[in-house]
Amino acid sequence: MAVATMGDAVEASLLVTKSTIDEFASLSGDNNPIHLDDDYAAETMFGGRIAHGMIAASVISAALADLPGDIIYLSQDFEFENPVRPGDNIVARVEVVEELGKDRIRVKTTASVDEKSVLSGEAVVLSVPHEDAD
Image (tube, rainbow, N blue to C red; front, side):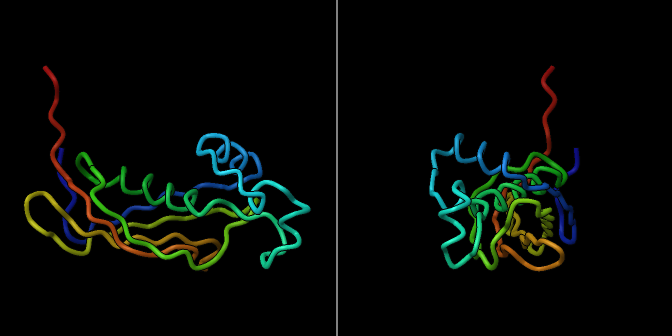
């Protein structure tokens, strides 16, 4: 299997529902009421429930997994730019922007809802050929 190289780019998407948020809270243990309680969240600066930021980050991870080769996360830096709400479809895009040597690549990462950025940053990952077990 080939490895990721300069210019490779892929996308992944996820439709976020209240169930998505509830299940993520259960899985992660992050029970912040801004994510889970409609009445509480309505009184915040967001005016309603918002998804955990790490849900958007997980769509970045899904996109990385679609790059050529076996992809192993080494680091990720990102900024949360706008909230994600129930009913939003997150589209994540990753693009290889630099080959760092020793199978390491730098990847530009973005996630958007309706073409409005919700998360942006960069990751460093390993991209290695997949070795078939005999």
